[in-house]
Length: 342
Image (cartoon, rainbow, N blue to C red; front, top):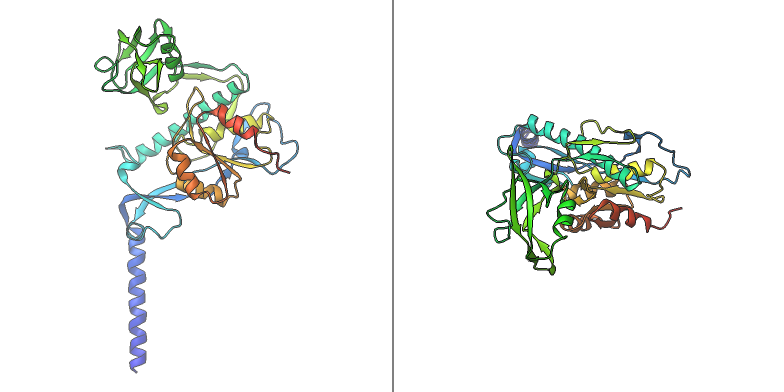
């Protein structure tokens, strides 16, 4: 009788624990969880006018990697090791202050749409096509407190012209500043709100290269939003409800592949990185989960932004090769060195 009573108690205790666990799994916490999502080939989702089929069916391809981001349940918050490769993050790491989940979702989808357009422009330019891009100018992300522009320029100022010449991108700004010698004055036409102003700044030598002039401002790819891009070749990319700008590098690589360039050379190539209009590649989030997702898909080569993103990817890559890149053209050169996979 005692045995039966003990068994019943254990059964009841087990059911109670199961019910509590189920409750904790259903109730959302105030944090988010990042989970790996298996990398997927891009070819089915990218359509380019004039695209050509893979002539040798080499089994390679360009892959994109995403991260599953969701509200963590109370159970996942308490035991965040429940999922392999997961990372628990505060809401502030996902949403801006005052931003609702719905607003964040819309912003992510908008960023995805723009990344697709930018990727198509960068890819077609690399192939020699003329792509018309209109831009309001170079947006300033930050101003060095001890640099020449301190007290003259502000974050979010837009540099429209340098010495009367248009500055459409950070690349243009650097090129036009470097026409000068350190110590020379440069005339900047800036847009601040609705007003245009002219500001003169004396260039200073770069601490790393005394022959190179600088004005002490920083730019950020995420702020450089082109007003309009006119593509010479129609490109359509549709990943459904996947959001965010971090697949830009993968999109551009696949556009080149679709137009008949064998850049994967028979390898499964995954890529992650936000792409700027000038072709530069900047850091993205979720590299731990993306690396695990690429590895699970049997990817051979993973292209990621140079710097901290590369360090994280190599930490979780196992035997998968990780290649750091700073620009789209550097990514193309890196892939060109791969030995053809039979």
